[in-house]
Image (cartoon, rainbow, N blue to C red; front, top):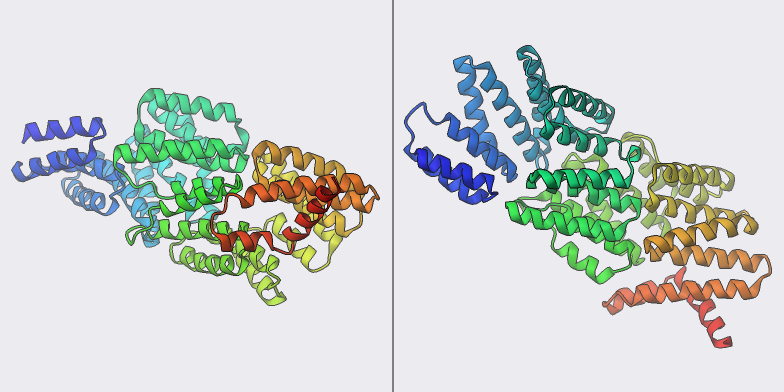
Length: 493
């Protein structure tokens, strides 16, 4: 029995997790009555690290019951923390477990305070980092918990907990840290050799680089995260879809589709299925297959509701709004329904309010909201959303017949989108500048912009191998006139 236990520990330390589980199972078969708790605890940790939440919960529940019977408060605390994390893993696909995890975290924090166990307090605080995924209103509390976790970790000088707490702080207040600080944290985690924590950090970096507009770096982080997940034997849920979103923004549509097919979306991972569907909806939205995109987003909204993920529901609801708007299927009734649903999950974004006001013909209000959105996104460093908001602002200024105001903003947008490799926004902004130049009577410069926009469009279309999708994109009512203007200039040359 002792040999199998030691072998299991060595295998787990080497991230040979399935091998470790085999050794622990053999040890449990040989152990005497009343002597299995230490082995159960070790096995539960491996099960937890490999996201086998239900199996880990079974072990922790047995341990918690026994420690309470013995009155062993220290081991009770350890079991509570483990069970809270196990319930959280289960909650990713079964949201009814999220409140159980939250209750246990709160109980563990109180017990840790009673025992003056500062390390356990930090661990309880760290687990709460994931609760805003289920309760958006918990965000401020999670941020405060991250601050407290860092303060305690520094007090006790625990480098592992300091690093864990630093990851939490970066996750909760990413705008307060520069890209260089993220990379320094990445180097720190790599030096520690904790592959599980490194995988989780890459997951955070995927999102940050996506919204910073660093699409190539996002793809690199996705690849590193997927490789680490394979190394330690855990399913990389969401990673392939995040990669696909970056590829879509780069206009690499066929690669994006392939990445979507690699998502962990089987029956055991309904959240993976929902997130893959969201990515698929974005794929069709960008290729202007609006009706199909709208149907997918409508499905994702319901899936996200059932899975207790308001943030995904919010993303899907916003994309549904855009799909209906661009397809000409938006009406006052479904607009009000979408706004009410978004309001139920928090404030409606300035971008959505600007699009809605533009649709209603309230141009001054639309411009005010678009300018607000630009300022917010630029201040936060979220270039992905900033460029989108800027393109919206240009459309509104053109409606207001203010072409002179369009030119400098368009130049900034063209430069930013070009640096990001964001082709969809690059051609739209160039086309807006071309329209503004035409309104100002500079036909030659306008034609140059249209020609440049048409070139970007054709480059994007070359990355779509499906002939039907390519034709839908090229014949879209927004795309075709730009191609025609670009071709007219080319014929003159």
